Length: 295
Image (tube, rainbow, N blue to C red; front, top):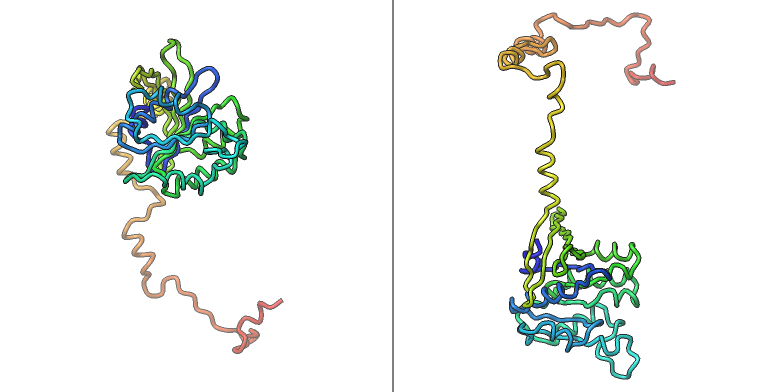
């Protein structure tokens, strides 16, 4: 699934790369940036944690002419007189204005490096609301954000990941040049697909999947290999062909035949009729025939 996501995040999708202190997800983030640039997409990067020079140095060999870096690294809180971009500008209006400053025929990909920096200064509901507005507003094609999970409470991480259409959690693998990617993808129909892959990133930022483990496939295999609960019984619960044929021919007493149904629905003359002649003592009022029901 990792190569499929690298080929292009779904339109209107939000991909969250979730890392920790044990393994950094920035190299994988750069692989997604490189893949988008190679697809001739415009990429806007909100850079809070690395400078433009460091980011482009990591993208050496990529077509960076369509890369637009918005410098939130130098003055992220707006302490100087002329900050380039601050964390307080993380809202729909400001981000839409930034993206529309460049003219491209295709909607751009927005990369946030990182969401953790924003979540330190903006409330979680406001961040999730802005991400949802960007997804539906049409200004950007897709959003890719880096999230340092061990910097936040579990509820904050859960809220951001719940807003995402895809989440990649990266962890270290046994070998030093490999990592484990636990992927959760939600389709538009609501179906959730989970995969676990071991991958490595080459020098040209291409991702090579070493092995793949599909949780959905494992579940299906275990169901197919489930033992028969009737296999070791001392009596037989299965029918032979002769017994099954005899069962189908058996007429059950509570099943009406066609002739019996016809006789019951179309009764003959005088059958089942009730004749009542009023008695002299009957108190029957023509104007109120149900007065005897009044209490």
